[in-house]
Length: 373
Image 1 (spheres, helix red, strand yellow):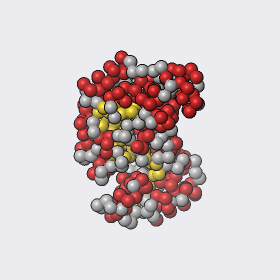
Image 2 (cartoon, one colour):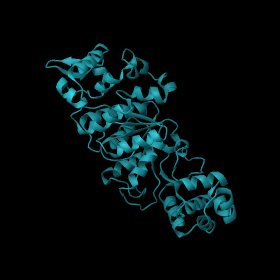
Image 3 (cartoon, helix red, strand yellow):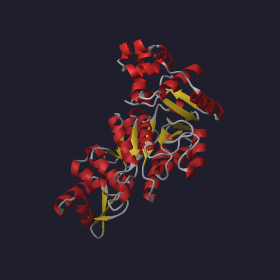
Image 4 (cartoon, one colour):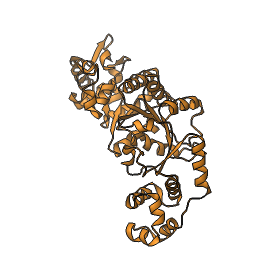
């Protein structure tokens, strides 16, 4: 794609009132932003139903100094500008209802996004969450899967670190301009991701971190991914927004269960109750999203052999299992957290124990078996 095309794309995206959906509709109809700007008011109205004032604004639009400044900044800073109509624009992301008209990219890792899994979670990560994040993302990276996350503190940062240290590809999606990565504590990590993977944003250089930007960032994380794994999340967290967006986009939604006593487990346990796939190992995710890959992974079949499959559990045992972790929990705590009577709960626990999912400890406490953590 030529520089003139990129300039036209930036100019069209800047037109007030066009928006993400309008941009996609116009460039798909005319073939490129340049063709949209050259179409003229009559065609814009007649062929696409664009309202007269907006059609007039588009027809009068030409690249301005702001467009040229962004293109100059990208050229000087080793960044690439990818309009929606660029053949290198990620195909998965282009499929969503409101794909970003423009992506600003540093690094080459975006080209390797055929197999992608988003991993997100709480900024206040627990030791359990850190361990699970690293185990998942190191395995994904070794298996040639790109890990997508949001560069935030906590789970996001651990996901990027684990993928990098395993020698894999990772993509960080920002809610700011490329020149203002957030949070500042991850400035060095952002540089590492750009060198080994890719850093991506829809926001122009100079854009600061504003609260409204991060839900928009989240739709890109899920849009780039075949599915999204939530490791830890409090109720109302941004990670749950990402999970919701993934579901709306037709992507897989996965959640790592946690201890009922931990705030960071409330959101993930709720996701499981609402239908998210329960995750205790990286194979759980790969088997659903990339079954052809799962069948060929060295050791993957052995890792799954002998372990009961989550979908075979009934609704009640699945709910009970979601509340258990590597930390022992008493029957009384479980009954209160799940709002179940003791008899019903003990029946479900017996099913889980006989299936090899949980182990009963002294004091009428229960814990997941090591292979199910």
